Length: 221
Image (cartoon, rainbow, N blue to C red; front, top):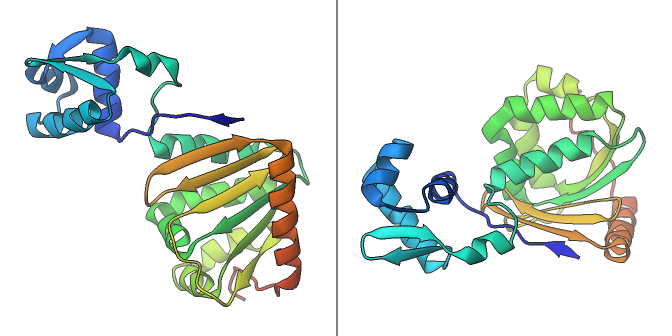
């Protein structure tokens, strides 16, 4: 089983919510309501029409009824934030498996405070993190960490292991319990699968690869 989401940029999501309230409206009214420039409203509406989420009738726009057949629109960042909060609610000792591309690891530093706050909570809750990345990503991580950052990661449960080969692409794979998530902070996508057999299979693969890799501390000694 997988869940379908409408992944919208913030302006697009605001327009959709506005049209759900207004029913039918034109660009000028939407612009005034949201206090967003008409040019931004126009370009976002154009994309929403192309994706058949919004219907254009002359100068007016309205929501396509099919939007109600899927989950409420979210921005990708909101879905990822919700996922990270869900992980922090796991029981002590539960394992979270992950594989993260170099580009995705670099994107973590776009919000250093959020990264550190999350890591501190994971350490506090004694959630076991088994992550796989590349040594290039580790080098980047360490070069961009302060000593304070390093201390926050020192006592984390579990550890990251690193491949010599670069992990290209824009994807993070996260798996725990019966779930697998494919997410990207850089390319703005989110896909969730709930299937115990698939999750168990992926977690076993990560465990096997993890077992062959040498431990390298994320923090700086």
